[in-house]
Image 1: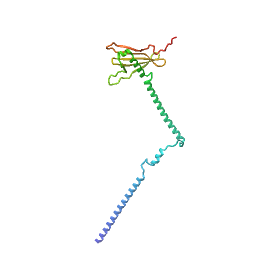
Image 2: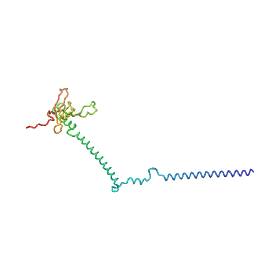
Image 3: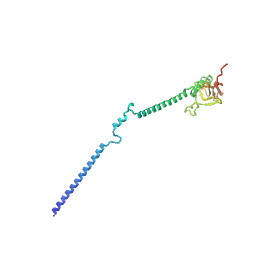
Image 4: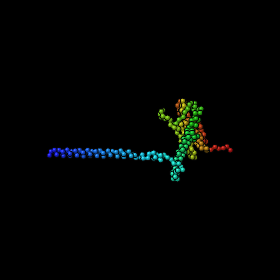
Length: 230
């Protein structure tokens, strides 16, 4: 009885071991199959946005000839081209206007820069001022309170008289090795719309010598129409 029982138990153990081995084998095969499927899926998929890389790039880089464009496409293309040329043309015109304004301000006969240069040259060439101030003589705007800072720009203003005529008032400073002075000028526009000196003088401060006012230009009829002799 005990021998039969032993054989029965051995048989059951063998069956159990077979079942466990079969289950493990099936589980391993299933995992292997899933891994193979995952690899195949990853190999066949492409990243988003990279589909047809060569064909799409070639499609976007190719330009149609004018004859191949449809009528709406021609209209759009012509509109874009016209707009671009208009923007470029407007930019060129704007640059030209700014350049003309700068050149007129710096080099025009009615510009402050030109008037200052002309008045300073008259002061430098005046014999009496050469004796008092000395040579070389230089001119500048309002003096700065600090020696390290540059002098301020020349100050000027335009006013209208009772008759509606324009008057230009300007003040600048001159200095030389012997002395210094303050120059004042007034100009009036003539019949040709050009500035004409009414007066130009230099005030010399008192010191070793008494204070003086040296006239370089004086024309009480500045801006008045010329009267022809009959």
